[in-house]
Figure (cartoon, one colour):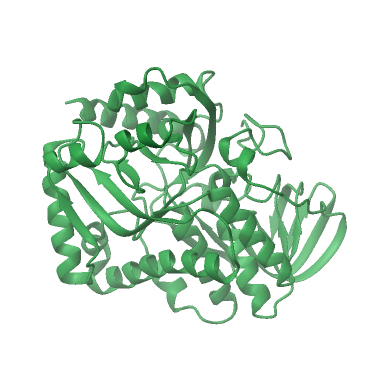
Length: 431
C-alpha cells in the first residue's frame, strides 16, 4: 500500500504553498529518541492533536505529541482556510438519523467549535488573518430553494440569526459571475491562514508544557505504548489524531474513513480593484457542487481557489491545470491571471460526513474523519478527547454515538468504488 505520508511530499518539509511561503517562523521540534513516559501520548500534529495536547497540558497532564513530519504539515496547514459554523452534514440529516435531542447536542458542539477557534486565536495572540463572513453559492436552482429552507429551519429550531438568503440577481452583484442561482450569507463563518493557526496552537501547547516531536513517524500502536522508528512512548492514554494519514496503522479506525486528495492554487496579486470585481466583500465562498469549489481573497488580493479531488495516494501531475479549469468555469475573466502556487493535500471523509470519535481500546481514543470541516471540528475534537481523558465524557459520548459505517469494498476496493461514486455525482452536477 502506497503511503500517503510519502507519496507526494518530501518527509519533514512543508510542501511549497502560499501558506508555507507566508507562515513566518516555523520552529523545529526534536525527533523522539529513545524511551519516553507521559500521561498522554498524542499522535498527529494537526489541529486535533495540537488542541488535545494544549488542553491536556493546561490541565496539568504530561503530554508527548508525535508528528511524522512538521507541525501543521498535513491538511491543517494546506486547507482552504474556511472556518465553518456547524456540522459538515446538514443538521436535518442528523435529526433523521439520531433524533432531535442528540442532533441538538451535535449542533451545540459544532457552534462551540467555531467559538473555540476564535477564543484560541484571541487568547494566544495568533496572527492568522481571521476575517469574518462566508457565502454559500447555489450551483443549481434547487440548491437555492434548499438553502432558504435550511435557513428557516435553523433559525426556528436552533436560534441562528446571522443567516441571509440571497437571490440570483443579488448573487451576481456579490460575486463577479452570473453562474450561481442564489446563495446564503453566514456572519459567523470566517476565513484565516490555516498554517499560522496550526503553528500558533502548537506554540501555545509547547508553552503549556507539552513536548512536541517532529520527524517521529509512528510505526506501531498498542494499548499504552506508541513506537516510532527511533523511540517509544509509554503512556496511560493515547489519542490518535491522524485523519487522512492513518496509512493502515489502526485498521479499526481506517475502515470507517477514506483518505481523499484535494487541490488549491493561488493567483498572482490581482490588485484591490480587480479583486473587488471578483468577490465584492471580505468573505469566503464555497458552492454546492458535490465536488465543491471554495475560494477567497488573500490579504494581498490573490484569489485562493480550491477545487478538484483524486482518490488514490498520488496527486495528478498538473495540479495548477486542474484547479485553473475549475476557476475559469466560474470566472473566465481571469484567464490572463497567472497561478503562482499550486498544491495538494489529503483529508479523510466518512460516508455520512460525520466525524469519528472512537474508543479503540480502554487506553486509546481516535478522532478523525473531519470531512472538510477540520478547522473548527478537529480543534473541538481535540478538546473533547482531552475532556474524556479528564473524566468529562458527555460531549465525547454524544459524538461517539454517531452512526458511521465502514466504507464498502475493504482495503483494496474502497478507493475505486469511491471514484465511481464521485464520477456519478460529478455528472449530476452538470445536469
